[in-house]
Length: 282
Image 1 (cartoon, rainbow, N blue to C red):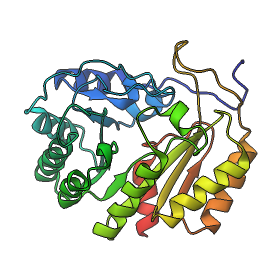
Image 2 (image 1 turned 90 degrees about the horizontal axis):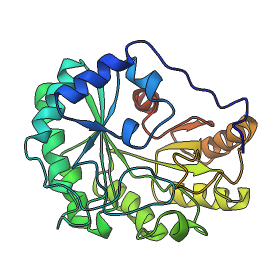
Image 3 (image 1 turned 120 degrees about the vertical axis):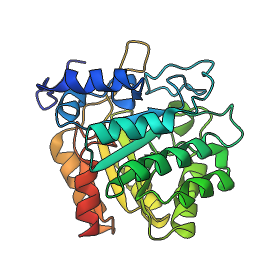
């Protein structure tokens, strides 16, 4: 299907400066690896969601364009490299995410914690958000990340229960909800966040069930965006959802008790993350 008129992105000046800085520090971003349509806007600010633990993922989710395959050896210098890049960019809000590393005993939780600590040391006044995988349900690994005291812990649901196994092979709907619930129970002062996509064939009734499940499991912040086919190898878009539907879902979600909701065709998990945090804490 052709892109509708309400889905538009633009390139911004300054984007390549950010890209060159990231290359100099030998860092990856989920913005590039996942082919985010907003990377021109975000890189021009500048801001970026740092992708740690290498560019190869041990899973192959249908919606994602990140490379799946045999992952690289963990770079133990990476936490300091992320901290140095964030400091050079003078960031007030840093998002740290990763590929899924099912090959590691802790799923990479220790590396997340070291990266948070390195960024805290370099930028003590900055806020830090971690966007984590499910760690295969390992609650001890989750606790390692929580003990590093990020300001926001994000884990995306991505889609509704009925098509979960199709969209996210090797992931489980209930396990992801439990991660959010466990995070809120173990560290109630840390904001929890999640996000999902529309346009994969879900119904509004299923979306409302997902909203209810997220809120009942302690999710504070929420992002809702349109699925866009990143490559021809990924499933096609089933439906382009109109902006007014996103607006209506935002209103419903706020009425359910979410502290902040970003909902729109081009909304992505890390986009305007600082604004979400500041509003939720105000």
